[in-house]
Image (cartoon, rainbow, N blue to C red; front, side, top):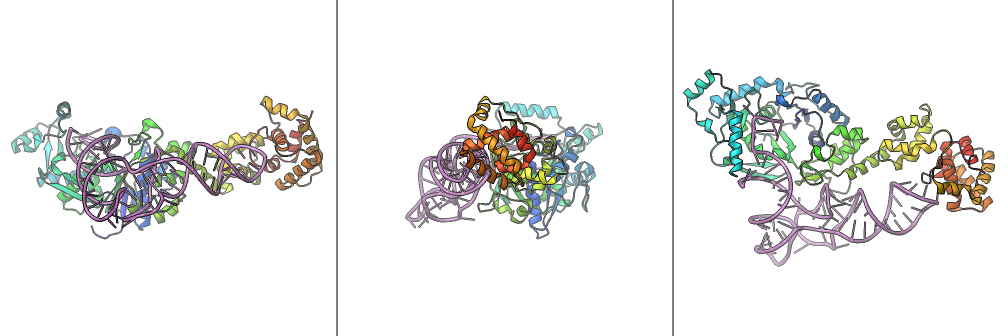
Length: 480
RNA sequence: GGCGCGUUCGUCUAGCGGUUAGGACACGGCCCUCUCAAGGCUGAAACACGGGUUCGAUUCCCGUACGCGCUACCA
Protein backbone atom coordinates (compact mmCIF):
# COMPACT_ATOMS: atom_id res chain seq x y z
CA UNK A 1 0.00 0.00 0.00
CA UNK A 2 1.55 3.21 -1.09
CA UNK A 3 1.76 6.21 1.18
CA UNK A 4 -0.54 8.71 -0.42
CA UNK A 5 -2.97 11.24 1.00
CA UNK A 6 -5.89 9.56 2.66
CA UNK A 7 -9.03 9.37 0.58
CA UNK A 8 -12.15 7.59 1.73
CA UNK A 9 -15.71 7.29 0.53
CA UNK A 10 -19.18 6.73 1.83
CA UNK A 11 -21.08 4.80 -0.81
CA UNK A 12 -24.74 4.32 0.01
CA UNK A 13 -27.37 3.04 -2.34
CA UNK A 14 -30.27 5.42 -2.65
CA UNK A 15 -33.02 3.33 -1.11
CA UNK A 16 -34.97 6.29 0.17
CA UNK A 17 -33.44 7.43 3.41
CA UNK A 18 -30.21 7.44 5.42
CA UNK A 19 -30.03 4.48 7.81
CA UNK A 20 -28.49 5.25 11.21
CA UNK A 21 -25.97 2.49 10.51
CA UNK A 22 -25.15 4.34 7.33
CA UNK A 23 -24.81 7.52 9.33
CA UNK A 24 -22.22 5.88 11.53
CA UNK A 25 -20.32 4.51 8.54
CA UNK A 26 -20.41 7.95 6.95
CA UNK A 27 -19.30 9.51 10.22
CA UNK A 28 -16.33 7.17 10.67
CA UNK A 29 -15.24 7.78 7.10
CA UNK A 30 -15.60 11.49 7.59
CA UNK A 31 -13.72 11.48 10.88
CA UNK A 32 -10.95 9.34 9.50
CA UNK A 33 -10.49 11.70 6.58
CA UNK A 34 -10.54 14.80 8.74
CA UNK A 35 -8.16 13.30 11.24
CA UNK A 36 -5.64 12.55 8.53
CA UNK A 37 -6.17 15.68 6.51
CA UNK A 38 -7.65 13.57 3.75
CA UNK A 39 -10.57 13.70 1.40
CA UNK A 40 -13.99 12.16 1.87
CA UNK A 41 -16.20 11.47 -1.11
CA UNK A 42 -19.86 10.64 -1.40
CA UNK A 43 -20.61 8.10 -4.11
CA UNK A 44 -24.08 6.95 -5.03
CA UNK A 45 -24.36 3.23 -5.74
CA UNK A 46 -27.47 3.08 -7.84
CA UNK A 47 -26.74 0.13 -10.08
CA UNK A 48 -29.93 -1.65 -9.12
CA UNK A 49 -32.52 -0.10 -11.40
CA UNK A 50 -35.35 -1.99 -9.77
CA UNK A 51 -34.67 -0.24 -6.52
CA UNK A 52 -34.70 3.27 -7.86
CA UNK A 53 -36.41 5.65 -5.44
CA UNK A 54 -37.38 9.17 -6.45
CA UNK A 55 -35.65 11.86 -4.42
CA UNK A 56 -33.58 9.40 -2.45
CA UNK A 57 -30.26 11.04 -3.23
CA UNK A 58 -31.47 14.48 -2.17
CA UNK A 59 -32.85 12.96 1.00
CA UNK A 60 -29.55 11.23 1.72
CA UNK A 61 -27.61 14.46 1.29
CA UNK A 62 -30.09 16.40 3.41
CA UNK A 63 -29.69 13.96 6.27
CA UNK A 64 -25.90 13.94 6.03
CA UNK A 65 -25.75 17.72 6.05
CA UNK A 66 -28.19 17.90 8.93
CA UNK A 67 -25.77 15.72 10.86
CA UNK A 68 -22.99 18.13 9.99
CA UNK A 69 -21.16 15.81 7.63
CA UNK A 70 -19.91 17.65 4.59
CA UNK A 71 -18.21 15.86 1.75
CA UNK A 72 -15.32 17.11 -0.33
CA UNK A 73 -16.46 15.40 -3.50
CA UNK A 74 -19.83 14.05 -4.48
CA UNK A 75 -22.70 14.12 -6.95
CA UNK A 76 -23.74 17.62 -5.93
CA UNK A 77 -20.45 19.43 -5.65
CA UNK A 78 -18.60 17.36 -8.24
CA UNK A 79 -14.88 16.75 -8.15
CA UNK A 80 -11.90 15.65 -10.22
CA UNK A 81 -12.85 11.98 -10.53
CA UNK A 82 -16.57 12.15 -11.20
CA UNK A 83 -19.24 11.46 -12.00
CA UNK A 84 -20.05 10.28 -8.50
CA UNK A 85 -23.18 8.41 -9.42
CA UNK A 86 -22.58 4.90 -10.64
CA UNK A 87 -25.44 4.84 -13.14
CA UNK A 88 -23.51 7.56 -14.99
CA UNK A 89 -20.37 5.47 -15.19
CA UNK A 90 -21.64 2.38 -16.99
CA UNK A 91 -19.28 2.75 -19.94
CA UNK A 92 -16.33 2.51 -17.58
CA UNK A 93 -17.57 -0.73 -16.08
CA UNK A 94 -18.28 -2.26 -19.50
CA UNK A 95 -14.74 -1.47 -20.64
CA UNK A 96 -13.35 -3.26 -17.63
CA UNK A 97 -15.60 -6.24 -18.14
CA UNK A 98 -14.48 -6.47 -21.73
CA UNK A 99 -10.89 -6.45 -20.58
CA UNK A 100 -11.56 -9.29 -18.16
CA UNK A 101 -13.37 -11.26 -20.86
CA UNK A 102 -10.47 -10.78 -23.27
CA UNK A 103 -7.98 -11.91 -20.70
CA UNK A 104 -9.98 -14.98 -19.78
CA UNK A 105 -10.60 -13.81 -16.24
CA UNK A 106 -14.34 -13.69 -16.71
CA UNK A 107 -16.93 -15.49 -18.81
CA UNK A 108 -20.42 -15.06 -20.16
CA UNK A 109 -23.19 -16.93 -18.38
CA UNK A 110 -26.40 -17.63 -20.25
CA UNK A 111 -28.28 -19.23 -17.38
CA UNK A 112 -31.67 -17.69 -16.82
CA UNK A 113 -32.69 -16.35 -13.42
CA UNK A 114 -35.27 -19.14 -13.27
CA UNK A 115 -32.67 -21.85 -13.82
CA UNK A 116 -30.48 -20.37 -11.13
CA UNK A 117 -33.40 -20.08 -8.80
CA UNK A 118 -34.29 -23.75 -9.31
CA UNK A 119 -30.73 -24.84 -8.74
CA UNK A 120 -30.56 -22.86 -5.57
CA UNK A 121 -33.83 -24.27 -4.31
CA UNK A 122 -32.60 -27.78 -4.98
CA UNK A 123 -29.36 -27.15 -3.10
CA UNK A 124 -31.32 -25.70 -0.27
CA UNK A 125 -33.54 -28.74 -0.13
CA UNK A 126 -30.64 -31.15 -0.18
CA UNK A 127 -29.00 -29.00 2.46
CA UNK A 128 -25.94 -28.72 0.30
CA UNK A 129 -23.77 -25.67 0.01
CA UNK A 130 -25.38 -23.05 -2.12
CA UNK A 131 -23.27 -21.96 -5.03
CA UNK A 132 -23.43 -21.53 -8.78
CA UNK A 133 -22.39 -24.78 -10.48
CA UNK A 134 -20.26 -22.94 -13.04
CA UNK A 135 -21.82 -24.75 -15.98
CA UNK A 136 -21.27 -21.80 -18.32
CA UNK A 137 -17.60 -21.58 -17.48
CA UNK A 138 -16.96 -24.47 -19.83
CA UNK A 139 -19.01 -23.30 -22.82
CA UNK A 140 -17.29 -23.67 -26.17
CA UNK A 141 -16.48 -20.73 -28.42
CA UNK A 142 -19.05 -21.91 -30.95
CA UNK A 143 -21.65 -22.27 -28.29
CA UNK A 144 -21.08 -18.77 -27.05
CA UNK A 145 -21.08 -17.31 -30.52
CA UNK A 146 -24.37 -18.91 -31.51
CA UNK A 147 -26.07 -17.79 -28.32
CA UNK A 148 -24.83 -14.26 -28.83
CA UNK A 149 -26.15 -14.36 -32.39
CA UNK A 150 -29.63 -15.29 -31.24
CA UNK A 151 -29.47 -12.44 -28.76
CA UNK A 152 -29.68 -14.61 -25.67
CA UNK A 153 -29.34 -12.41 -22.60
CA UNK A 154 -26.29 -13.10 -20.49
CA UNK A 155 -24.39 -11.99 -17.48
CA UNK A 156 -20.64 -11.88 -17.02
CA UNK A 157 -19.15 -13.82 -14.13
CA UNK A 158 -15.66 -13.69 -12.70
CA UNK A 159 -13.49 -16.78 -12.91
CA UNK A 160 -12.59 -17.53 -9.34
CA UNK A 161 -9.56 -19.82 -8.97
CA UNK A 162 -10.61 -23.41 -8.23
CA UNK A 163 -8.22 -23.87 -5.34
CA UNK A 164 -6.11 -22.03 -2.85
CA UNK A 165 -6.98 -19.29 -0.45
CA UNK A 166 -6.72 -15.58 -0.07
CA UNK A 167 -5.55 -13.84 3.05
CA UNK A 168 -5.84 -10.17 3.78
CA UNK A 169 -5.34 -7.74 6.58
CA UNK A 170 -8.31 -5.88 7.95
CA UNK A 171 -7.53 -2.76 9.96
CA UNK A 172 -10.16 -3.71 12.51
CA UNK A 173 -10.24 -7.49 12.41
CA UNK A 174 -6.65 -8.37 11.69
CA UNK A 175 -5.84 -11.30 9.42
CA UNK A 176 -8.81 -12.79 7.58
CA UNK A 177 -8.55 -15.71 5.23
CA UNK A 178 -11.03 -17.17 2.80
CA UNK A 179 -10.77 -20.27 0.62
CA UNK A 180 -11.39 -19.72 -3.07
CA UNK A 181 -13.46 -22.85 -3.37
CA UNK A 182 -16.21 -21.31 -1.29
CA UNK A 183 -16.37 -18.18 -3.38
CA UNK A 184 -18.97 -18.11 -6.11
CA UNK A 185 -18.23 -17.09 -9.66
CA UNK A 186 -19.73 -13.75 -8.86
CA UNK A 187 -21.82 -11.96 -11.46
CA UNK A 188 -20.00 -8.76 -12.43
CA UNK A 189 -22.24 -7.48 -15.17
CA UNK A 190 -25.99 -8.01 -15.06
CA UNK A 191 -28.00 -8.82 -18.17
CA UNK A 192 -29.37 -5.28 -18.15
CA UNK A 193 -25.86 -3.99 -18.72
CA UNK A 194 -25.43 -2.59 -15.23
CA UNK A 195 -22.57 -3.77 -13.05
CA UNK A 196 -23.08 -5.45 -9.71
CA UNK A 197 -21.83 -3.81 -6.56
CA UNK A 198 -18.78 -6.05 -6.53
CA UNK A 199 -17.45 -4.84 -9.84
CA UNK A 200 -18.53 -1.23 -9.54
CA UNK A 201 -17.06 -0.62 -6.10
CA UNK A 202 -13.69 -2.02 -7.10
CA UNK A 203 -13.51 -0.11 -10.37
CA UNK A 204 -14.63 3.11 -8.72
CA UNK A 205 -12.47 2.84 -5.65
CA UNK A 206 -9.49 2.38 -7.89
CA UNK A 207 -10.25 5.16 -10.31
CA UNK A 208 -11.26 7.53 -7.55
CA UNK A 209 -8.01 6.89 -5.72
CA UNK A 210 -9.62 5.54 -2.56
CA UNK A 211 -6.93 4.57 -0.04
CA UNK A 212 -9.10 3.14 2.73
CA UNK A 213 -12.36 1.26 2.43
CA UNK A 214 -14.31 1.70 5.66
CA UNK A 215 -17.64 -0.08 5.50
CA UNK A 216 -20.01 -2.39 7.38
CA UNK A 217 -19.14 -5.91 8.43
CA UNK A 218 -21.74 -7.32 6.07
CA UNK A 219 -19.13 -6.81 3.35
CA UNK A 220 -16.44 -8.86 4.99
CA UNK A 221 -17.27 -12.15 3.27
CA UNK A 222 -17.22 -10.61 -0.20
CA UNK A 223 -14.00 -8.73 0.34
CA UNK A 224 -12.09 -11.70 -1.02
CA UNK A 225 -13.91 -11.32 -4.35
CA UNK A 226 -13.05 -7.66 -4.42
CA UNK A 227 -9.41 -8.29 -3.68
CA UNK A 228 -9.34 -10.90 -6.41
CA UNK A 229 -10.65 -8.32 -8.83
CA UNK A 230 -7.85 -5.94 -7.88
CA UNK A 231 -5.49 -8.76 -8.67
CA UNK A 232 -7.18 -9.41 -12.03
CA UNK A 233 -6.78 -5.78 -12.96
CA UNK A 234 -3.25 -5.53 -11.61
CA UNK A 235 -4.18 -2.77 -9.18
CA UNK A 236 -3.05 -2.04 -5.66
CA UNK A 237 -5.98 -2.64 -3.33
CA UNK A 238 -6.90 -0.07 -0.69
CA UNK A 239 -6.70 -0.78 3.03
CA UNK A 240 -9.77 -2.53 4.37
CA UNK A 241 -11.63 -1.75 7.59
CA UNK A 242 -14.87 -3.55 8.39
CA UNK A 243 -17.03 -1.94 11.05
CA UNK A 244 -19.09 -3.94 13.53
CA UNK A 245 -22.82 -3.89 12.90
CA UNK A 246 -25.47 -1.85 14.66
CA UNK A 247 -27.98 -4.17 16.28
CA UNK A 248 -31.62 -4.35 17.31
CA UNK A 249 -32.43 -5.10 20.91
CA UNK A 250 -32.54 -8.82 20.03
CA UNK A 251 -29.05 -8.47 18.53
CA UNK A 252 -30.07 -8.94 14.91
CA UNK A 253 -28.88 -6.43 12.33
CA UNK A 254 -30.58 -3.10 12.97
CA UNK A 255 -33.72 -3.11 10.89
CA UNK A 256 -36.83 -1.16 10.17
CA UNK A 257 -39.11 -3.77 11.67
CA UNK A 258 -37.97 -3.10 15.19
CA UNK A 259 -38.10 0.66 15.40
CA UNK A 260 -36.82 3.75 13.67
CA UNK A 261 -33.75 3.38 11.52
CA UNK A 262 -33.94 6.48 9.36
CA UNK A 263 -31.97 9.50 10.43
CA UNK A 264 -34.94 11.65 9.47
CA UNK A 265 -37.12 9.76 11.96
CA UNK A 266 -34.85 10.83 14.76
CA UNK A 267 -34.67 14.33 13.43
CA UNK A 268 -38.45 14.55 13.40
CA UNK A 269 -38.68 13.27 16.94
CA UNK A 270 -36.60 16.15 18.19
CA UNK A 271 -33.19 14.56 18.44
CA UNK A 272 -30.35 16.99 17.95
CA UNK A 273 -27.76 16.23 15.29
CA UNK A 274 -25.09 16.77 17.95
CA UNK A 275 -26.67 14.09 20.12
CA UNK A 276 -27.21 11.55 17.38
CA UNK A 277 -23.67 11.99 16.09
CA UNK A 278 -22.19 11.78 19.58
CA UNK A 279 -24.19 8.67 20.40
CA UNK A 280 -23.55 6.85 17.17
CA UNK A 281 -19.84 7.68 17.31
CA UNK A 282 -19.60 5.79 20.58
CA UNK A 283 -21.32 2.73 19.15
CA UNK A 284 -18.17 0.87 18.26
CA UNK A 285 -15.57 3.50 19.02
CA UNK A 286 -14.29 4.98 22.27
CA UNK A 287 -11.62 7.52 23.14
CA UNK A 288 -9.78 5.21 25.54
CA UNK A 289 -10.81 7.12 28.62
CA UNK A 290 -14.05 7.97 30.41
CA UNK A 291 -15.15 10.89 28.30
CA UNK A 292 -18.50 10.56 26.58
CA UNK A 293 -19.58 14.01 25.55
CA UNK A 294 -18.11 14.96 22.20
CA UNK A 295 -18.73 17.54 19.56
CA UNK A 296 -18.10 16.69 15.93
CA UNK A 297 -15.02 18.87 16.03
CA UNK A 298 -13.64 16.99 19.02
CA UNK A 299 -14.36 13.68 17.34
CA UNK A 300 -12.42 14.82 14.31
CA UNK A 301 -9.38 15.21 16.50
CA UNK A 302 -9.83 12.10 18.59
CA UNK A 303 -11.00 9.45 16.16
CA UNK A 304 -8.85 6.51 15.20
CA UNK A 305 -9.64 3.17 13.62
CA UNK A 306 -7.43 1.44 16.18
CA UNK A 307 -10.00 2.22 18.81
CA UNK A 308 -12.92 0.73 16.91
CA UNK A 309 -14.19 -2.49 18.47
CA UNK A 310 -15.08 -5.74 16.78
CA UNK A 311 -18.40 -6.73 18.29
CA UNK A 312 -21.80 -5.46 17.18
CA UNK A 313 -23.48 -2.79 19.26
CA UNK A 314 -27.12 -2.60 20.30
CA UNK A 315 -28.72 0.72 19.49
CA UNK A 316 -29.94 1.81 22.92
CA UNK A 317 -32.63 4.44 22.54
CA UNK A 318 -32.56 5.19 26.24
CA UNK A 319 -28.97 6.31 26.10
CA UNK A 320 -29.58 8.32 22.97
CA UNK A 321 -32.32 10.17 24.85
CA UNK A 322 -29.83 10.91 27.60
CA UNK A 323 -27.34 12.31 25.11
CA UNK A 324 -30.10 14.47 23.68
CA UNK A 325 -30.95 15.89 27.09
CA UNK A 326 -27.27 16.59 27.73
CA UNK A 327 -26.70 18.35 24.44
CA UNK A 328 -29.93 20.28 24.80
CA UNK A 329 -28.73 21.54 28.16
CA UNK A 330 -25.34 22.51 26.77
CA UNK A 331 -26.92 24.77 24.20
CA UNK A 332 -26.76 28.54 24.75
CA UNK A 333 -30.15 29.94 25.80
CA UNK A 334 -30.58 31.73 22.51
CA UNK A 335 -30.27 28.50 20.56
CA UNK A 336 -32.52 26.59 22.91
CA UNK A 337 -35.11 29.34 22.59
CA UNK A 338 -34.90 29.04 18.82
CA UNK A 339 -35.51 25.31 19.03
CA UNK A 340 -38.49 25.91 21.29
CA UNK A 341 -39.84 28.85 19.36
CA UNK A 342 -43.04 27.15 18.30
CA UNK A 343 -44.09 26.39 21.85
CA UNK A 344 -42.99 29.72 23.23
CA UNK A 345 -45.15 31.39 20.60
CA UNK A 346 -48.10 29.24 21.57
CA UNK A 347 -47.60 30.17 25.21
CA UNK A 348 -47.95 33.79 24.24
CA UNK A 349 -44.40 34.82 25.06
CA UNK A 350 -43.64 37.50 22.53
CA UNK A 351 -40.92 36.71 19.96
CA UNK A 352 -39.49 40.21 20.48
CA UNK A 353 -39.07 39.58 24.16
CA UNK A 354 -35.89 37.58 23.71
CA UNK A 355 -34.85 38.25 27.26
CA UNK A 356 -37.92 36.58 28.64
CA UNK A 357 -37.79 33.74 26.15
CA UNK A 358 -34.25 32.97 27.10
CA UNK A 359 -35.01 33.23 30.81
CA UNK A 360 -37.87 30.78 30.35
CA UNK A 361 -35.82 28.18 28.51
CA UNK A 362 -32.97 28.60 30.97
CA UNK A 363 -35.36 27.87 33.84
CA UNK A 364 -36.88 24.89 32.07
CA UNK A 365 -33.79 23.48 30.34
CA UNK A 366 -33.06 20.76 32.84
CA UNK A 367 -36.59 19.39 32.41
CA UNK A 368 -36.20 18.68 28.73
CA UNK A 369 -35.17 15.66 26.74
CA UNK A 370 -36.70 17.11 23.58
CA UNK A 371 -37.51 20.70 22.69
CA UNK A 372 -41.19 19.74 22.51
CA UNK A 373 -41.14 18.74 26.17
CA UNK A 374 -41.19 22.39 27.04
CA UNK A 375 -44.87 22.61 26.08
CA UNK A 376 -45.88 20.66 29.16
CA UNK A 377 -44.12 23.16 31.42
CA UNK A 378 -45.26 26.31 29.69
CA UNK A 379 -48.89 26.32 30.73
CA UNK A 380 -47.82 27.62 34.12
CA UNK A 381 -46.29 30.65 32.43
CA UNK A 382 -48.96 31.31 29.85
CA UNK A 383 -51.24 34.33 30.04
CA UNK A 384 -54.48 34.18 32.00
CA UNK A 385 -55.72 32.31 35.00
CA UNK A 386 -54.44 28.94 36.09
CA UNK A 387 -56.67 25.97 36.44
CA UNK A 388 -56.59 23.82 39.55
CA UNK A 389 -57.74 20.43 38.44
CA UNK A 390 -57.13 18.17 41.39
CA UNK A 391 -59.54 18.00 44.30
CA UNK A 392 -56.67 17.66 46.74
CA UNK A 393 -55.06 20.83 45.50
CA UNK A 394 -58.30 22.77 45.80
CA UNK A 395 -58.78 21.77 49.38
CA UNK A 396 -55.19 22.71 50.23
CA UNK A 397 -55.77 26.15 48.74
CA UNK A 398 -58.91 26.56 50.81
CA UNK A 399 -57.20 25.78 54.08
CA UNK A 400 -57.00 28.53 56.66
CA UNK A 401 -53.22 28.46 56.72
CA UNK A 402 -53.00 28.82 52.96
CA UNK A 403 -55.40 31.73 52.99
CA UNK A 404 -53.22 33.51 55.53
CA UNK A 405 -50.21 33.00 53.32
CA UNK A 406 -52.07 34.44 50.34
CA UNK A 407 -53.17 37.56 52.21
CA UNK A 408 -49.70 38.17 53.53
CA UNK A 409 -48.22 37.56 50.10
CA UNK A 410 -50.62 39.99 48.45
CA UNK A 411 -49.96 42.74 50.94
CA UNK A 412 -46.21 42.44 50.57
CA UNK A 413 -46.31 42.02 46.81
CA UNK A 414 -48.23 45.25 46.29
CA UNK A 415 -45.39 47.14 47.91
CA UNK A 416 -42.63 45.15 46.24
CA UNK A 417 -40.65 47.35 43.85
CA UNK A 418 -38.23 44.89 42.30
CA UNK A 419 -39.77 41.69 41.02
CA UNK A 420 -36.60 39.70 40.56
CA UNK A 421 -36.27 36.07 41.56
CA UNK A 422 -34.09 36.91 44.55
CA UNK A 423 -36.36 39.72 45.72
CA UNK A 424 -39.35 37.42 45.47
CA UNK A 425 -37.58 34.74 47.47
CA UNK A 426 -36.79 37.30 50.15
CA UNK A 427 -40.38 38.41 50.14
CA UNK A 428 -41.64 34.86 50.63
CA UNK A 429 -39.26 34.69 53.56
CA UNK A 430 -41.09 37.65 55.02
CA UNK A 431 -44.40 35.92 54.43
CA UNK A 432 -43.03 33.08 56.49
CA UNK A 433 -42.13 35.42 59.32
CA UNK A 434 -45.50 37.13 59.29
CA UNK A 435 -47.62 34.01 59.13
CA UNK A 436 -45.40 31.55 60.90
CA UNK A 437 -46.09 29.11 58.08
CA UNK A 438 -43.01 27.56 56.55
CA UNK A 439 -41.65 24.88 54.28
CA UNK A 440 -44.04 22.87 52.25
CA UNK A 441 -47.09 24.47 53.88
CA UNK A 442 -45.83 27.83 52.72
CA UNK A 443 -44.57 27.04 49.24
CA UNK A 444 -47.09 24.53 48.03
CA UNK A 445 -50.16 26.77 48.20
CA UNK A 446 -48.21 29.56 46.50
CA UNK A 447 -46.86 27.23 43.86
CA UNK A 448 -50.33 25.91 43.15
CA UNK A 449 -51.86 29.36 43.06
CA UNK A 450 -49.16 30.74 40.80
CA UNK A 451 -48.67 27.84 38.41
CA UNK A 452 -51.47 25.35 38.93
CA UNK A 453 -48.77 22.67 39.24
CA UNK A 454 -47.36 21.07 42.31
CA UNK A 455 -43.96 20.48 40.74
CA UNK A 456 -41.63 22.75 38.87
CA UNK A 457 -38.58 25.00 38.95
CA UNK A 458 -37.67 27.42 41.71
CA UNK A 459 -40.73 29.42 42.75
CA UNK A 460 -38.93 32.75 42.77
CA UNK A 461 -37.85 32.15 39.22
CA UNK A 462 -41.37 31.29 38.18
CA UNK A 463 -42.99 34.26 39.89
CA UNK A 464 -40.47 36.49 38.18
CA UNK A 465 -41.38 35.04 34.81
CA UNK A 466 -45.10 35.33 35.51
CA UNK A 467 -44.58 38.96 36.42
CA UNK A 468 -45.81 41.05 39.32
CA UNK A 469 -49.25 41.76 37.95
CA UNK A 470 -49.84 38.20 36.88
CA UNK A 471 -48.62 36.81 40.15
CA UNK A 472 -50.85 39.05 42.21
CA UNK A 473 -53.86 38.27 40.04
CA UNK A 474 -53.30 34.53 40.38
CA UNK A 475 -52.91 34.58 44.10
CA UNK A 476 -55.86 36.93 44.42
CA UNK A 477 -57.96 34.42 42.51
CA UNK A 478 -57.45 31.87 45.27
CA UNK A 479 -58.50 34.13 48.12
CA UNK A 480 -61.87 33.27 49.65
C1' G B 1 -26.11 -26.72 5.03
C1' G B 2 -21.27 -24.03 3.87
C1' C B 3 -18.05 -20.03 5.00
C1' G B 4 -16.69 -15.81 7.80
C1' C B 5 -16.78 -12.74 12.06
C1' G B 6 -17.81 -12.03 17.04
C1' U B 7 -18.53 -13.08 22.77
C1' U B 8 -16.51 -8.15 29.89
C1' C B 9 -22.54 -5.79 34.22
C1' G B 10 -29.61 -5.68 31.07
C1' U B 11 -27.24 -1.95 27.29
C1' C B 12 -22.69 1.04 25.41
C1' U B 13 -17.80 0.10 26.90
C1' A B 14 -12.32 0.43 29.52
C1' G B 15 -8.86 -3.43 30.09
C1' C B 16 -3.79 -4.90 25.61
C1' G B 17 -0.42 -11.49 31.81
C1' G B 18 -0.47 -9.74 38.14
C1' U B 19 -6.51 -4.52 38.90
C1' U B 20 -10.81 -4.53 45.23
C1' A B 21 -12.28 -5.84 36.80
C1' G B 22 -13.05 0.97 35.87
C1' G B 23 -16.75 4.45 33.56
C1' A B 24 -21.63 5.68 31.25
C1' C B 25 -27.15 4.69 30.39
C1' A B 26 -31.16 2.39 32.88
C1' C B 27 -32.49 0.70 38.07
C1' G B 28 -32.35 1.30 43.92
C1' G B 29 -30.75 4.40 48.20
C1' C B 30 -28.90 8.98 50.30
C1' C B 31 -27.80 14.28 49.91
C1' C B 32 -29.35 19.02 47.99
C1' U B 33 -34.40 21.15 48.07
C1' C B 34 -41.00 24.06 48.94
C1' U B 35 -41.72 20.24 44.98
C1' C B 36 -40.28 17.89 40.48
C1' A B 37 -36.28 17.72 37.25
C1' A B 38 -31.04 18.63 37.08
C1' G B 39 -26.66 17.86 40.05
C1' G B 40 -23.50 15.26 43.89
C1' C B 41 -22.56 10.74 46.62
C1' U B 42 -23.65 5.65 46.85
C1' G B 43 -25.63 0.42 45.97
C1' A B 44 -26.80 -3.91 43.14
C1' A B 45 -24.95 -5.74 38.42
C1' A B 46 -20.17 -8.74 33.97
C1' C B 47 -15.11 -11.57 32.18
C1' A B 48 -20.05 -17.81 27.79
C1' C B 49 -17.84 -22.84 28.77
C1' G B 50 -13.72 -26.52 28.60
C1' G B 51 -8.77 -27.46 27.74
C1' G B 52 -3.85 -25.80 27.21
C1' U B 53 0.73 -21.99 27.52
C1' U B 54 2.53 -19.56 31.96
C1' C B 55 4.84 -18.82 38.56
C1' G B 56 0.12 -16.35 37.24
C1' A B 57 -4.94 -15.76 32.75
C1' U B 58 -10.59 -11.40 31.51
C1' U B 59 -6.05 -10.72 28.66
C1' C B 60 -2.21 -15.52 24.51
C1' C B 61 -3.44 -20.50 21.79
C1' C B 62 -7.00 -24.53 20.64
C1' G B 63 -11.78 -26.53 20.95
C1' U B 64 -17.16 -26.23 22.32
C1' A B 65 -21.48 -23.44 22.79
C1' C B 66 -24.12 -19.35 21.51
C1' G B 67 -24.98 -14.98 18.50
C1' C B 68 -24.62 -12.36 14.10
C1' G B 69 -23.33 -11.71 9.01
C1' C B 70 -22.70 -13.58 4.05
C1' U B 71 -24.17 -17.42 0.88
C1' A B 72 -28.95 -12.77 -5.43
C1' C B 73 -28.45 -10.68 -12.47
C1' C B 74 -29.60 -6.28 -3.90
C1' A B 75 -26.42 -3.15 -2.03
